[in-house]
Image 1 (cartoon, rainbow, N blue to C red):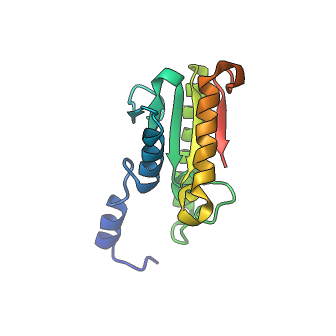
Image 2 (cartoon, rainbow, N blue to C red):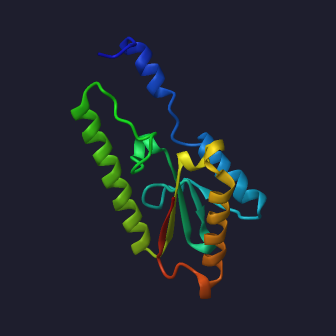
Image 3 (tube, rainbow, N blue to C red):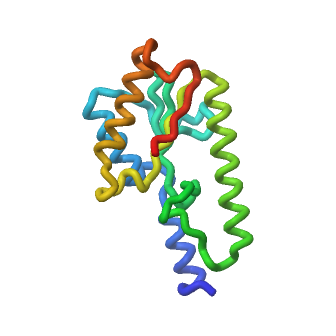
Length: 155
């Protein structure tokens, strides 16, 4: 049983944002301050990546641990009510993410996944973002790059 009435739950769920989230803004500010320029949520690419560095052929997804089911993460909890519904919903999200990543890689894009929990203040955000920067620099330098259509899960 839910602890709030359906109207309140509906308002709470509608407040969950898909764009311009706090974790996404952290990554955007970090990259912009270091001179990287990008496009946001390009609709012509599978999955509408959060950030697209066109010149480098890099797509960055900033995933929420709950919705995208970060393996082994404490934030990837499951609601106790309607477990079948949530299990199916989460499974579809994960399958869609994998299909989008595969489609991007097939099209020649490098794909980076940054998880919400890695951007929390107590998780050592700077080392994780520095690792992202190193990967972008590697893509920029072909001799050290991820290679054609590589992908990396920043964990």
